[in-house]
Image (cartoon, rainbow, N blue to C red; front, side, top):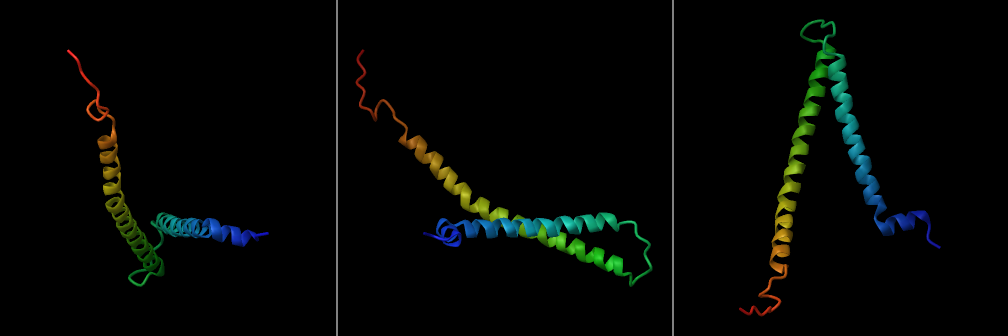
Length: 108
């Protein structure tokens, strides 16, 4: 009898679980950075060396980098999937039955 871990390995659930966990972690980092920026927007700044301002700048950089990485991933996915979708629609049209393909005889 297989253990639950062996079944998860055989069915590929580990990869799916890791992808879901990585996505949730990515989303939580971005959302927590955005909430921190919104919460500390009107803080009492102490000047040029304000630690809160430094933290806000760091959070803004995290959000900018996350957006850049998401755009890169989406463009790669679109580049790979759009030709496949186009090819699948093109083959569906070419494979559709026509009277000529079915050798239908047309009498006057």
